[in-house]
Length: 330
Image: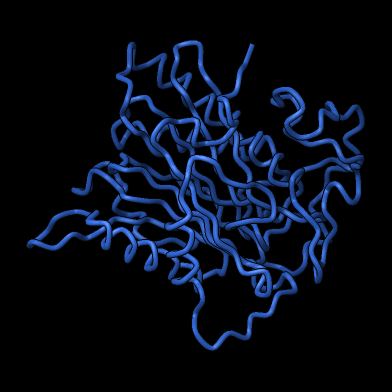
């Protein structure tokens, strides 16, 4: 029987912290994952329209072996500046890759497009550096889900999106978790409100509505706010000791969870991306079966985290789409 960690959050992986910051007027925000020591990380991109910073450093053949934080942000290209605020906070804390006597924090980032969600985008100064700094300062083991952080302004085809997280404890004792900002061209639910991710739900973490018996007409969504306003970005993490190649493989497998939870996924209009991170706390026992189990768990956690993001979204003034609870729940 599958079990979650005690918080059912990515921070059930010991040592990880997540911080959120958001601006309700702009309807956007930033989420930051960090730890007290550098993390081994990888990335895999399957969407056709990604927006990223420093992801090339995560290729297994590149020299940098650890990252100090990972950033998920709203704001499209403007949101990439959130990483600058995180870099400033890390440098002030004495963190970073030591080069020429200077600490250079390594902070890969990815963004969603939330610029057409009804918020006031007429800023004079890019707000994302300050939001990134605030999210880094707020990083803690416990954090909120739904309409917060990078999920503040997120939308799906017909409902508000949001920020989601989930965790799983494997029989081997390894812990796997996921953090995701859900903003796809597709839908997280079938026509009657059940989640596509329902087969992977643990307990009632997103309402226990069960698996739909009638999937309705599975078609390309027609009600997204406007073309190109899409992308789902995620982080999966584990305490199993993985190198950069192992993290890249786990990120690749985790995309299966996105496809299970969002229909359609990985379209030319989405920038779908998954980072993977390892704290390295627990050595692998048998590398091949352990890697398979970690990848499968990452996919399941990501599917569940996506559903939780939509399930926990909250209505706020100016919304252009309803929440799941407004339309289907109580």
